[in-house]
Structures are given as structure tokens and as C-alpha cells.
Image 1 (cartoon, rainbow, N blue to C red):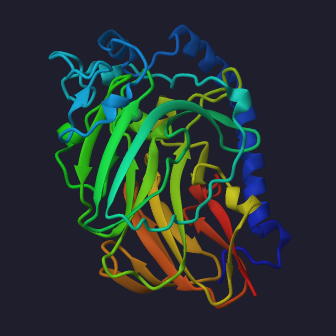
Image 2: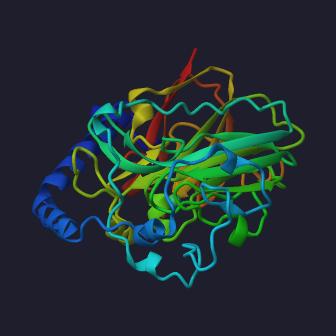
Length: 395
Ligand SMILES: [Cu+2]
């Protein structure tokens, strides 16, 4: 029995999400008094930022220097003058730096909200580069992101979008990665495809600094990347997430391939048109929205399309920070789900499989039935907050 009978207009995918959106709006209205008091509380706290005081005190300022991105051993970082940070500066990854665990109330506000235009996030898996070594240099930035025509969030990002760019490589390739931080808050990068000492490689960069490291993904699969700076809940929850897809050395069968990064949004009341993120709500784990690729319901408004007979492969990565994804396609069954390290660890004839927060799995089937197929987080208390899309199989 399908989840939503196409015979009932009220149970169509569109109706489900529209009803959800309406319900969310009502919920927002119902909380207006609470939100008003929250805003007052926020003002009183002067929009405290995680670790920003220590970061500003430690940072000598200035724009990032291109020379900062030159290759260095894993985890070394430099200040804008190309020097190693002095001893005694706070490392927000350190368990000793408790300041970073106590100074968190709301994200900083990004500017330029009016210029944040809504764009569907292209879910298409990028082509596999021919080169066996990739040089990747990204910036961490605070940027307003319009996650729906109505909602702008004051996001913390990799390369100005939420999720960040999709990376694709092969097992055994070399990734030379550099992160340059352009934001007052310390940031870092944790690739789940890497096996590396996190204390050095995943350490934080203060504003104007860069961190570089090199890794070779050992296993194929769909992996999360995220900022790992403390408190990691705040940094993942504010948008610093994405996916790295690692192909096996023997390619999988040709397919139409798509990447879905699920994340959830915990929003405070808007300030100057943009919603800051709400750390208390992250801790309470009651999201306002749950989305595939950072825009709630975007693939209902603009579905993903394939042709009848296409092999379809979804790389589902759950960035969280907390909510899992019980991935299911209404009216279809998965021929194969790769739990990890494809083509190994394959299970067959699967209706739904749970991708945990911080995990990634690969879902595959042959689209031999035309129609409109909702792909959902079947944990519907979360799915109906925006983690529903439509796959159209055309004749
Ligand atoms: Cu961060």
C-alpha cells in the first residue's frame, strides 16, 4: 500500500507539503509571543557569538592572503602574515577551551539579505574529474541564503551556499584541501571520507587564516563533510555541511545520479529580514524545517526528472545536525542499497533504509514504471517539514 494514494487530492505530495507549510506558519503564529520574548532575550544578550570574543582577540585582522593557501603539512594554519599562530591562542576544538561551549546564543547576522535570491540546488552528481589529484580551496563565509521564496537564513557556509559544493573523486585519489576563514567565528573542515588525525587536520582557522591538509579516501561511498568547530552542533546547524562522493575503482553501472544532503533548520525570529539560527532549539531537536539540499520542498516545486528505463542512483547524505533520514520512494522499491564501500555491503529489495546523522548511503533502482514518485524521509514528523521531493519518470 502506498503512502499517499493518488486518488485522494488531500494526500497528494503537494497537499502534504502545503498543509505542512501552512501548519508551520500556524505554529509560528502560535509562538509569536514566545518569539517576541526570545527576541527581547536575544537583544539583551547582544547576539553573543560562539567564541567570537576570543577569536577577535586572537586575530590580527586583515584580508585573507592568497599565500595562506600554499600547501602545508596537515593541520598547520597560519595567520594573514604567513606565521604560525602564537602559543596560547584558543583552539576552539580543544576540550580545554570551555569558553566556546558557553558563549552561544544565536548566529551572527549576515548582511545583504535583500540580494539573497532563491535558487534550486542542482542535485545532479558532478562528473568524475579525470585528474587523480584535486586541489580544493574553499572559504568559510557568513552569507544570507534564501531557502524558500519567503525565508532567508543567516547561514554560515562553505563557499557561500548551503549545502556546500558537492565533491566527487575515486577511492585512492588525492585531495589537497585548504580552508580559508573569512568569518569572525573560527571554522574548520571535517571530511568523513578522510582518515587523518582530527586534532591537527580538522583544527579551526581564525579569521584570515587557512588550514590545509591532504587525504586519500580509502573507501568508496557517500560521505558527509562539515565544520567541526566547537560547538559542532551550532556549526553544522548553521549550514556548514555538504557531501563528498567517492567512486569505487571499478565504476558502478551507468545511472542517472543525484545527491541529496538532508539537513534541518532551527530558526530564531528574523532580524533585518534574515533568520539567525537558534542554538537552544538545536539542543531541543525540534526543527522548523527539514530539507534535501538546503531548501525545504524544493523538488516538489521543481521535481527531479529521469526517463523510463533509466537506472537511478541517489546518494543520500544526512548532515543533521541530529535528524536521521528514513529514505523511501513512494511507489518504488530499491533494487540495491549500498550501506558503504560499494559495490560491497549491498542489500536488495529494500523499501526504506535509515541514514543516520553523519552517515551516507546509496539507493539504486531501475525506473521502469513511468509516473510521479515522491521521495521522502519516511519519518514523517520530519519529512513533512520539507524533506519530500518528487521524481518524475517520463515515458
Ligand atoms: Cu564552523
